[in-house]
Image (cartoon, rainbow, N blue to C red; front, side):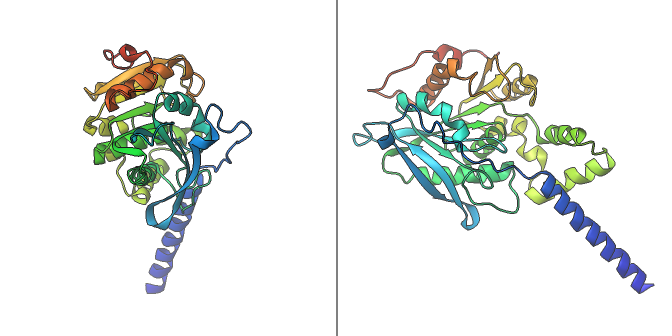
Length: 310
């Protein structure tokens, strides 16, 4: 009897271990190499340097720091840019030139398990937020950076992580959220439906286990909840044709915060091209949050960036 009970427990433990491995494998982010064929257009090479940043738990994060001319005169505001799931810092390069031209330093970083940053057993949206915190801590110690004038810009999971960090630390002046989802539970349900994982039996277990692994309840890290705790201005940018995250998610986010404003674009989930005609509005939003930058070209579009909620 004891032997049978022990065998049953061992079988359950093996099954749980197998399920744990399968879940982590299924949720693993693809590591995409940087495409440097058209590297760093619009920025002089002496304004750019590749950096390694101390990350959480002894890891190292890869990144690029772009600093505008004239930083020897006074420190400048900086924007930390975080990519989305399965992407990397190089993919976010299109946001750099307009920010750089307007007088902002820009730090692009690879999250763990992405690009050239160190890997771990898994990554997650809360771990993206940890990497953002590490990047900000590094920026605050750079002599040419104004540590009191930092902002965040993120895409998709990176945007959700920016909101999560800003809801906890209150050490940034503004957040620009590109294509953020409203709630990770809905993202997981959609992912499992796509993979034909039956819910509620198997799906319920997967959801519960994922929350245990990442060490956070979905409700606690959901952008629709964290944005309400963010104390700085937030610009929520979303494409009307987004077929990954419904455009309605952006409306739900903006409805939860008096500090949030909405900028809707004609575009899909990847906003790199769709955002270009609206770069002035994003820059103007950041200028308004971080203060004007004398000696640099001011961009138009502040009415759009800071107008009434849509």
